[in-house]
Length: 225
Image (cartoon, rainbow, N blue to C red; front, side, top):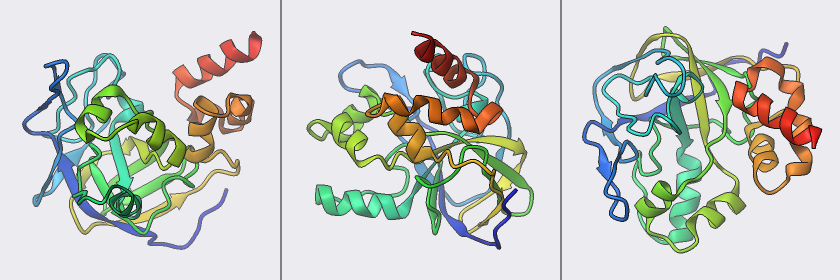
């Protein structure tokens, strides 16, 4: 087990969708429109997908069939990656623009390992679970041509996090990496294996039970055929 020195980063902002964002094309509510809050919010495991929504108190997950649940309880995106996209798109991208609950600084989310654990503030313990797969709602919100393709090619997807230990979090909290597994399955590799490099799917097996159940089922199904 690898336990690097700490702290490694901090929360620039915590963002929630108190008022769900409505997509123009489908007219359905979504929780992608998030804005920073200045107060502390509580995080906890919300329950399985289909039942549980967001793990962040006050946040909204409207499509619980495809979003939310324990393996997608909290979504983090790095300010450094937002800055890259700002330069690419030539427009301001404030915290929460990508629908992230946590806008981080000083953390390499693409290089985070599946099962890596972060202490956020004094009490909350979060675990890297899986990358974000871009969807049509995200594309509609961004309003950029070929957004899903461009986001996929870049490969900086951010991190979906499980809540291992609940607690309050707020902007400015330190993020300490308390545990890194021995395997080399990063969220970047995970994303590529599910999108542009399916031949890498079997490489994900090294992450074991830290992989979400549906990913383990996908690997078993595709590697059988």
